[in-house]
Length: 281
Ligand code: ADP
Ligand code: MG
Image (tube, rainbow, N blue to C red; front, side, top):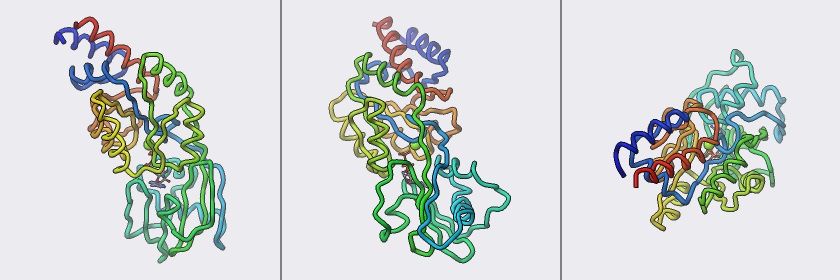
């Protein structure tokens, strides 16, 4: 394409709060027929509301919340940030031996107890039979399953229209890639009209799915938000970071960054890229 029109396309993108890092990225965006979305924080709002606390151990609710929040206090995960909004930071316990395991959760020592927070199978393999339809943080204390906190994960108001717009633009494959539970993922996907869902993905699974999708030679776009999305943004042909949420790591590995917290700019980017390439040809 003529460089001049690519520059014009980039400035048109930037007027729409989309920073595109190269002219090549515009060409790829124009050609994409596959867009993969992360769920939590991308298709859904980047803050979840604490809903329910269910205890399976002999501990009071406030103490349970305080323990979980103490372990999560340094995590940048969206569930951790959402939980921390609900508790008084001044009363949190000091923690030691803190280790965050990407895509799983956090483990730490608090008051001489080993506390694990995160995914059900990560915190304890010996847990009650649960089938939750809401995003949850599970907690185990000294290896014993202790309970969970559920959060309502609200779909972004513009998400459904964005998906419909992409389909109308001829983007044939819309895929959800998420680390969240299958039931939760399917519920959100159904509401949005997304029929390809890969749930319970570890970061490496997301990358493998992206590689598999890529095999048809058309560029694949991945839209994500969090720090934990950086590897999948790099693994796609066009990584798009929703950058307004301070996801610096995600932005660095992205080809394009959306500076406003609004998904509609994803379909807008495709529109602008197509127009740019038409002018260029
Ligand atoms: P997504 O793909 O939906 O953005 P992630 O890969 O970040 O999800 O995480 C997958 C799952 O791992 C989450 O749904 C959650 O259950 C668990 N998890 C990961 N990190 C944390 C954390 N810091 N606190 C609680 N749960 C976590
Ligand atoms: Mg996410």
